[in-house]
Length: 438
Figure 1 (cartoon, rainbow, N blue to C red):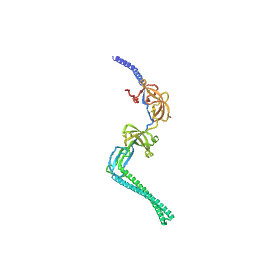
Figure 2: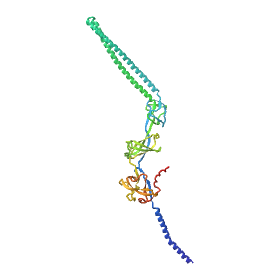
Figure 3: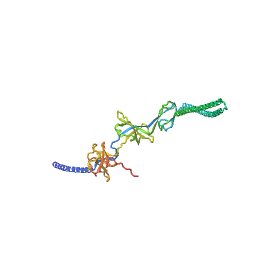
């Protein structure tokens, strides 16, 4: 019995060992068949083609300041009686914002006006003297005419022997005396006219002094020279001001300057006066501004080789103040094109992947890019011929053949062929979904 049991056990063991390789081979065959079927679609990383610049533009930081700041100063001596504005108040050009004590200025004005009245009286008196001189001249002229007529008659009578020689000579003397009196009266008119001219000159000079006194008195009213915002108060009512003392500062924020002090000297060839600039403010992150370069400093920092640049932006809503952090991008004149990684370029017409182009290669070469096609519901790749231009930072410009918005293969696990089924990896970029109709 023991011998029979041993023989039967050895037989069963032999049968089981003989069937094990066949079952294992069948299982491996099934796993191999299923694996090949599951790996038929090659995994690819996909991206969306977009337009942009090949090289990233550097971003600079700056600080906003008022386009201009005007210092309002006292032009006369006086005590500050009132100041009607405070920090942050908006003012208009010509608006009265303060008042100085003008008592002494008013007194000076009245004195100047009184002196002007006296000067005008002098002119009136001089003109009266001229009128009187004209009357005297007329009387003297009549006397000359009469004396000359009498002298002529006396000379005629003397020739006829009707009068003595003495009477004739006396009439001649009277005629000469009347002529001298006429000349003296005429000269007096000239003298009086000169006196009137001098008096009128004194009147004009005094009128200038009166106008100056009025102007000085007007300085007692402090008016804003520009439209803007009060940025600083230097003094308070009650203080005595001397000519030139600062009262407050007014900033013009209709436009705002951005001071960018850290522009590298290597960027200067790409920056020009009047150039458009993109500006963003951290205080208003949802709004973008467009400005222009208004000043490029001729002097660079001798240590860091940095050049200050000023940019101007409009402040139409008046919300931008001074001291805000601004981020500035100097817009490049280069045309924006589709930019993709160099790994997406496939060399040759067969569509088989080959090493990507390098920066040392000549630009404007031809290559191929695999784009994703989902027309039948399964992602497939289609080979497209493209022309690429310049390369930098492992990226390449596409001059033609690939449009913005197309999905293209960045890299694949295996070489690809035109029309091949692919499996899009989970790290791939998904196309933007279009809005659903209402």
